[in-house]
Image (cartoon, helix red, strand yellow):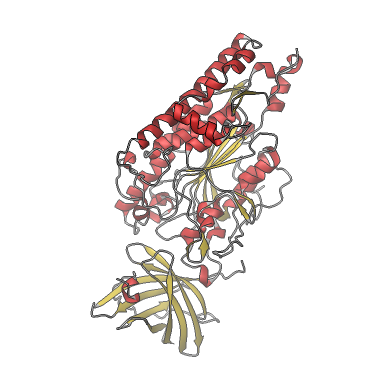
Length: 463
Length: 139
């Protein structure tokens, strides 16, 4: 029997839903090899701004970010990474690296760290100081990967954010706001916009505005509070009739997951339309006021996209430089920007570490979801690489040394995991990123950003 | 709060200068320095100096209360016996805000000292700083 295409979709009025990985997609005679050939590393790049408490002098001494021990016997308990303990076997911490491209290169650039940093995180390139349309930085890591391995998916990559990043024009110190807001750059002069609204992500993943759907139809669907699955009933029934019991069950679970996420978005929209005072009054109705609820929803959407192979690459910007948002869910009520400028005082550094811990503490949610989502002979987690970091080190000093950075996931065997690697002083983070890119398939990449050479992410020695 | 003087956000204290003489390299103090003013937090500020014998001229780009905006202040001063003083004023209001920068070059090649701001009958506000020579590069 002819295998089902990996690109087979369920279609309804204005709706296209891609399928999860099904056994029916694998040619019967070469199942294991075919599965391996179909699997590709999924990449999630998460940026948090303002560095970490553990990048300060006191934070280094107290191991607030990087563990004391290098190698495999590291203790996460004092660090902001402690929530990752259940995933330590797939965790690779690389500490003591720098993001020099975020530093000022000229006198006029001094003081512009907040407006310049974010664009350097995934590009490791120094931006041109301009407020006009002649912006220039570098091609970002996620885009290098998407341009090579994302072209055979319906969406090569997606860029998501949690904070408002819609500012136009100049943001400060002569820098265009795109340097502050965009972490993904398809070309040195092409920053990619970020999506904040989970509804927009959902609609884009499931083609709600495509395949002939008009805006009026979309509005009608939203007004009726119906599910996209309502338009797929016959299509689902037709496909299910051709599947075996295991695939039918997997398809049902997947569609239920789609429905559950859609329902959550509808609940958030209804809540935000109810007219009650919002914590984020200017945010779209699809954006929950709760930071963790927003992040988790974005992660659920990413898992759905990976499961159905709609895209393999996500970039997620968790914060925005100089934001004064507070995170009461962390247990600390102080505002982010003020707290990150701790003045070198231990009490304030520990408060900032609480916020760092809270932000990192949301990553296990994604890892757990990936782990519990079947994919071929294993789970999505087997072939995913989560990269988390910041282009800033000690936010109180606005420096870019000892930046926080870790990776989770074995990326199909590219990373051994269970390691804390401490780089020699002055090592560019770009060296690590170059090694990662080579490990996940871009073997021919000679340089990345300001890299000076590769950094062996398997044992921490120069290649 | 619209005058230029009140927009200046820097604060400081008068720091006693030690009698230690810092060493100078061949370039003296000429160049661009990334100065970290220590207020509630460290504020990065550009200090551009030119040394001619004992005479110093330059500019310091002081931050304003509007994030991301600075005002350039012209400076004049001298470098003698290992220490230097620079003075300037932020014009644009009825009574200028004065800026005095005192410091020395330490053994690590960094400037350290105090910025003192005064004017408008508000007394003086002082702030310690360290400054690192900028590795100037083309973009």
